[in-house]
Image 1 (spheres, one colour):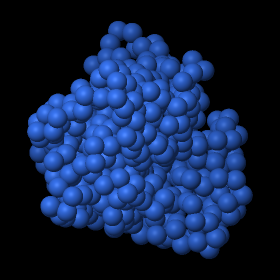
Image 2: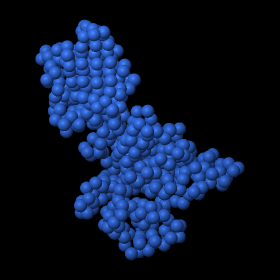
Image 3: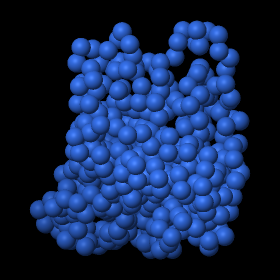
Image 4: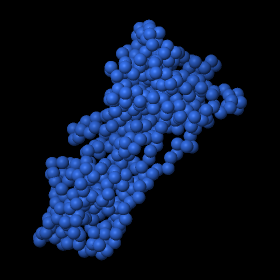
Length: 506
């Protein structure tokens, strides 16, 4: 007796077809799985055996061999449980082999025959759509699969309900799409008293998708400002939401199958390792920079991060992708994120504050800032100082503009940039921060006085070519916020003001 079931293996963002072949023959009872399975798959036979017992099906006392083809591809994950159980049920003539041949089957089995969530349902559903197959998945992830647009989805809460569905004794309904409720509305920039220059810089960063570094003493509001950047960013488009949720699905971060149109905001602790930030580890899962794709990565206490981990951000900041290479695998993940970083000016945190500096100033400030390399700082478009807020400002200052008001300006500036990209017949750009090469020069359209100021200043402080271009991008965003087609001298002057020179050891 033989059976075959379509399932998959995940290799980074790629979904690979796996042909699960089962042979059941007479002989000494045995249950063998071949085809480079990992420890999780090897344990599947115990979960399948217990699930059969839970629904009153006698496990066959036969010699059972399962091959996961192609045999030279490493298979890992608990999602093979349901495919193995389905193949056994087909071989026992309990489930119809012909009908299941049109489905990709995946899900983890509990000992009580319940189906539990697995990683990667959304990309698998998209793969099923492209290959003209249906999908069998756990009920809790049916909503996630439905966002792919796939019409033939069987989302089962248990193995028993799946059997009843394919035997015509029960009809499992098509899953409803679920949307994650936004938490952005609870955050508002109006809550931040003072810090008008930092708020202005944050608005520019939001409008152009620019990286930003805030430097200031403890308690000045850096983390508060960063957490409210999401409230002035436009929601994800359908395409962006699908890209982002695919990454979160592979990482197992989509809860209850709910898709969110909020931009992701990731804030890892400063003890995060390099694999945690850029991706990797035993199962090569996406790191924080990929989970922040199309959103914000906030690194608080920037100098306290492992230096090697910070240096690993340099290439993704330029290319928008990260390639994780190990001896066993080679995966590429999207990683187009907006970096927002915060740091104290020195180890004690009070350099420049009279009466509060430590005895090592200014040497301690130079040593502390030198923990961040020059090449990484060069990739940060906006450097802004965040001074302490006085108690008088906290009590007496009225609330500033709300996030809703600022968001409208950000949307208008982004709309102006999008119209410009369309006029250049470019469809793969979303913000000014992504401009490069000849396209950057065409988009900026510098006035003569602005050009002269930029060249003179760049030569004076020995601005790198990358830094020069990043000033141009920021100036273009400032002009967009003021609805100006050309970049004027005042726009360049403000952009240069954000190009702060910092002492480093590089």
